[in-house]
Amino acid sequence: MKREGTSNLPFPAWTGVILTLFLILMDQVTKLLALSQLKGNPDIILIPGVLQLKYLENRGMAFGMLQGKIPLLIALCLLFFCVFLYIYIKIPKTRYYLPLICTALVLAAGAVGNLIDRVFRGYVIDFIYFSLIDFPVFNMADIYVVCSGIFLVFCVCFKYKDENDFRFLNRKN
Image 1 (tube, rainbow, N blue to C red):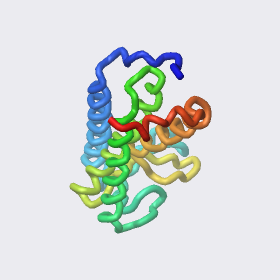
Image 2 (cartoon, one colour; image 1 turned 45 degrees about the horizontal axis):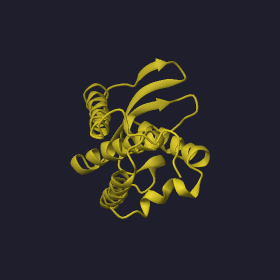
Image 3 (cartoon, rainbow, N blue to C red; image 1 turned 180 degrees about the vertical axis):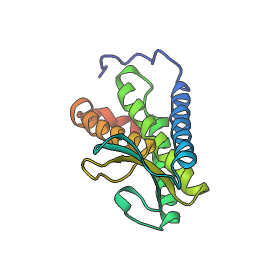
Image 4 (spheres, rainbow, N blue to C red; image 1 turned 60 degrees about the vertical axis):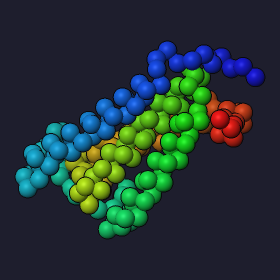
């Protein structure tokens, strides 16, 4: 069945690679700034009692899980990236799937951003802290992963809820 908006994307598919690289670059730049400006210095209060910049070296994953298990975290990230790459290659590059494509690219940028830290530093630099709710310290890559993960759930629940929407995964190229 033909879907509305199944025409090709109005831009080349490699534009997604540029977007992903830009997001990874922004993540790494903010982490380098945190390293140079925050490490060994007092926190920077942005909104008193609400938001501050605080340097933290996270040797685990979200909420401190799997502390010190860097090889396992690297392996999980590489596995995720391989699954992502498979889906990205298979997904039709049409307007109908544009929200899914963009969400996947942002999610991949977050995963790669933190993977770079784990591989080259042995830890992830976190620096954004919501003191109002004592939320764990996080970084730009974490924002990419969480926001795109939430958006992905909404996409699957409300836009791509027909079983035919994912038949491209079974298609042979």
